Length: 193
Figure 1 (cartoon, rainbow, N blue to C red):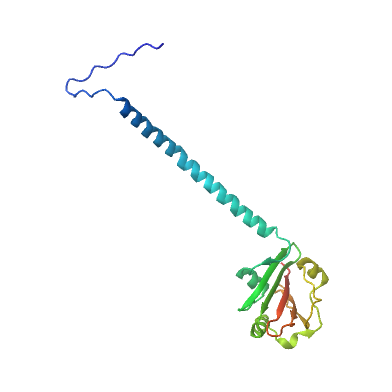
Figure 2 (figure 1 turned 90 degrees about the vertical axis):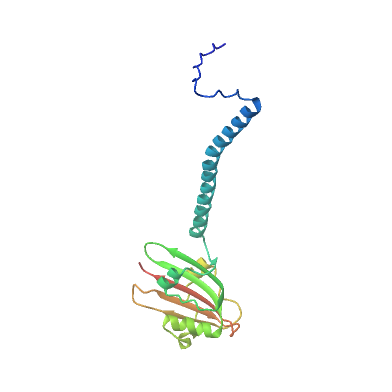
């Protein structure tokens, strides 16, 4: 048992407060508990949400950079500019894959476009349709294996190699004109850092 502590006498000028009722005491304790809960809970909740977002961001980057094989979507503008792969508008069935090592960096891109888009693409590379050679598969078997491309389907296959002086990239292009109105284009652009 604890001994009762002596109380300080009330000042004669202050009006005396009535003793706290049990209902008021419960309200005061509930409000104190709520405030303490919010002071702890809000920052803790923020930390949990922030950690989850950070983890998701890391997983997105990990999946992007650990990809093996073509990834559906457009290569970034920086990649298209660096590797000089001017994907035209309109284009669909777009996929890409980039590899980097100390010796050579490569960007693999595939897309389907219309006839004018093919001309625009070739012009953007600095060549024209006359540079395409029928039945010439210019993409190496090594690059075909890495990208998963097989150039054995129906249609007329044409290719070209656009060599440029370092550090500009060299592009190997294969075009399938099974549907001449919507040719499928495969590009491997490689550069030596």
